[in-house]
Amino acid sequence: MTESTRVRDDICLIAKSIFDRGLTCGASGNISVRLSDGSYIVTPTGSSMGFLDPARISHLDQNMRHLSGDKPTKETPLHSAFYDTRPQTGAVIHLHSTYAVALSMLPGTDPDNALPALTPYAIMRLGKVKLLPFFLPGDAAMGAAIRDLAGTRSAVLLANHGPVVAEKDLWTATYAMEEFEETAKLAVLLKGAQPNVLSDAEIQAVVRKFHVDG
Image (tube, rainbow, N blue to C red; front, top):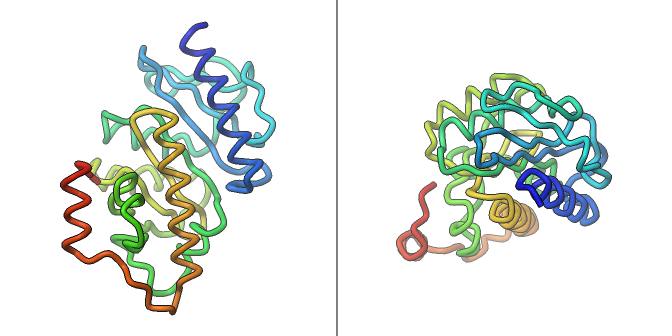
């Protein structure tokens, strides 16, 4: 089995699981993976995560130019910005998951750290999550906003739109995205309840122990 075939199969498996669990719906959400030759496998525009055909997934060259498969997601500039500014990135996932989107719209959400420190796992997998302003879907300005972060964040939350996670490989990105949505769910459910969040000392202990870099 070639690397491209394996990646395509993994994307379809993960995407269907994400879709079946309601983490994204309709034709929303997109996934990309960087192959060892520097080219990219990217989910097509207008496609449902629940019904991807591995043979039709887009293949882009090292400069994000379309080589084969269906036309890639219009959010390609968003993905490209993470790959360019975080060389360790091997995969990017963007969803329209309900609780993360809800959190992006709630007053009081910290623009520099959108996810409150409710559990150590969100800190371990995501670090600080930057809340970015609203952009039209597919707007190249989204990529510019990621580039302005200069590789300091592995995850962002697009206002009124959804979360984006960049990680070393597809499975790690998937686990991080799942943690993102579960933490956002906790944050929305606990809104106004004054929960006991982790202290600054506890947060720093997690950061040191697990070498959190974003």
